[in-house]
Image (cartoon, rainbow over all chains, first blue to last red; front, side, top):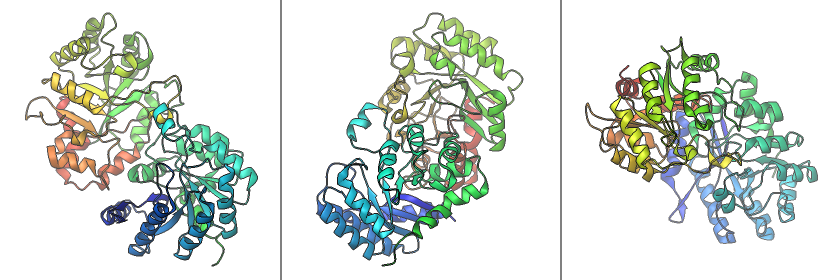
Length: 256
Length: 258
């Protein structure tokens, strides 16, 4: 079984982009991906609450379209903290399983703390778009993207939180972030992104352990599956990354 | 049969590579059922005098020429490239040329570059153009931020109408003009599939639909990258067996006269 812990659906004309959603499921069928955790974050700027809710509505639409395949992650911008807490309640009521943050705040910014505390209360994971970016244009376009250092700092403050550092293959210096997370044992990392550097999964297993890695694609589907299949790890480790670790996270949820 | 258009030997100064010597690379190829691979020396990107890297590569692949097909790395602004290109082709039996304008500080359509590409073409050597070597988002602070762009590729393809080009680590070519001049029995412009996809956006399928399976070659990027994703792309690609055979080996066998 394979569960993609970091995926996305899209908005088109104010609704779910159904064609994109169908193609996501088709890719899953062809690559044996059974389930996908999906969000629809605003990837630029500081969105207003209406825009944030629209993205989450689109995720709910996708969950209804493919109830056995798509599970939702509620995107919030923590600076809207009252609205964020209400939106998390609304989305969990619709069946979502976690929270998604993007690059509007470093994850260890105090503005994020109420959202983290809400996640702890609900027993749900927080997945954050992350990377240690090394080229100036990308870095300047995302001045508050979190890396492993930010996650490790937050994990020291909230060791009971289930934090997921997004896409070690998302393009940044993943060795930087893995080094930072090696001593932050409560933080998970997802393996998504287009980067398929030979040895990256083995190194992540060496530094974090296989039980802290989550298989994911972030829409780079063959890269996502291929790097796990191609890694020189045991079948038990592969199974943990592909499926079991995500189930462990889901089991932490408080009953509603 | 599987031929990989995108393989390398040597050390990358900014990240540890594994399987980066001949036994290691062959082992990785064996584990993934890759029969042959086009290889260049990574050192040729960084040595001021690239020819020393070509000589290292020739020595390394000696005895393995049935599986490893060497491509030379040369800088058109470094003295002696004309002699070294001829040495690579005629004495070392290199089969093509790989160029790195971002690292050797020139533009593909500079006069010196066009002169070298023309000389390689006259010797029957296709020219391989990696649009990038590594993802600049994870670059070392001493590494380049420059990738080759689609317009740069289009310009050199247009300027060299008799040259066969093998574009590596490419994105965005499906909506470009680079394949438009391919003709039966003439020069071929192909891209490897290492950064393309067979699902969702399916730009591999888009190139096949527009220009035929003759425009795509199999490429992994080993040992920089895991080879399995490239193999998966061919597995899940919605194409017939004849098209897949062209991608996996037929197109490169034609271009390299194997």
